[in-house]
Image 1 (cartoon, rainbow, N blue to C red):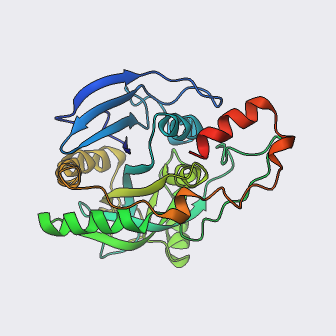
Image 2 (spheres, rainbow, N blue to C red; image 1 turned 135 degrees about the vertical axis):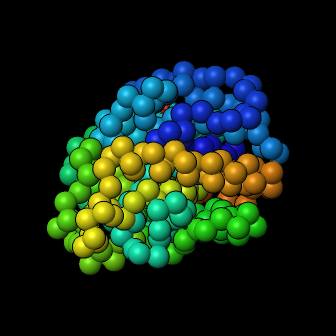
Length: 281
């Protein structure tokens, strides 16, 4: 099943025929919002609002583990996220869409980064952290709509909630990053730990603050204003995607835990085995 994680300004999905609403609990706490299961286009999908139904959670306050676990427990095997991003590349203009295939983690350790630990040793491979099939699917439908979209993009995730300094912006550009945001880490890596195929549609709101022209250094109100106006592109793209068949799930992602867990199953508690079984589905 496909799940959609809505970002800033996308707390619900238009034209979603709601079948049921779940308020799950998980071993990692409560997810950000109730999870809606509904029908859109040719698919039953799950929808979760990353920042909460009232946008009450800052990026470092989001319970990413609970979000991903709850979606997996409800049957998600593929996830498309929607995110606001700042552009670190002049070619990615405000209003354009960008689909990252690489991530640079520049958070500060305030977020729980993994399901594992506490007696469960697991090391998943994240050399290629996103689903290439989902990226190609998104790119193909954006082209059909005439929507400008950038692939082959590296996303730098910063802690927030403040916007960055010019020094930080230049540092991330020199590190090879193309866009910057606050929410995709650890979300993308937790999805891999849960054996879920993942991709994000980033909506570029501004040029961050690396440009010498101070008029390009927009304020938060302008950023979110442009983001809201660009959400329609993301809505149209999602509707186009959901009118088509889902792409194949990559076997290496759906079996990511097969050789990654070092702790013997016999050494796990009953509770640990229970939630690990969910991740292994």
